[in-house]
Amino acid sequence: MIFQQFFEKQSSTYTYLIACEQSREAVLIDPVVSEIEKYAEVLQSQNLVLSYSLDTHVHADHVTAANSLRSKFGCKTVIHRHSGVACADIYITDRSAIRIGQILIEARYTPGHTRACTSYVTEGMVFTGDALLIDGCGRTDFQEGDAATLYDSIHQQIFTLPDETVIYPGHDYRGRFSTTVQHERLHNSRLGQGRSKAEFIDIMANLNLPYPEKIDVALPANQACGQS
Image (tube, rainbow, N blue to C red; front, side, top):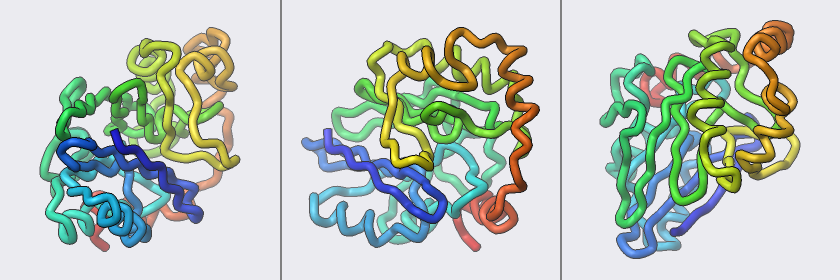
């Protein structure tokens, strides 16, 4: 497997490249439109063909590169069927899978941050988008978010993975790159140490977070696959 993690500073967004060494097919998870030239440089330098662009959800803090990548590389855009996005090529559901060469990428439906959140599992790794972050999780106070739903999603779809599974989140604001299922299950400040659903709901209800700075631009653009 070929793997690379990209970081977009303005929104602290992680994008992930996964590719099959044999077939040279590649996917990008949560690509950001401003970073297309970086992705293109890596794809070209490693002789890779971009087959799919996967979004974990409809983002509110940056604009997806889905449409631009489709125009530039002819790849297919992928998102969950509950996203409300009408312009994707493939609408996934829980436990559907995308294959690139010898690599199978399984979708796990993890709503709660938004209605469409999906995590992607492959070869000892899980890409959780905003559902589960390092020592945190996505907020649940907009985009049809629901704390009880997010609690169930994380416990049923992510914490049930093997302890050593590496978690790659959609964001981090402290320079951290990854974590593990075991570490988050034990130490996550909102979900760890066996916190009950009621405790989690109370924590999420009292975060008092500001209105997302870029939601009014990013959300409508992302509902159109990144078109302004």
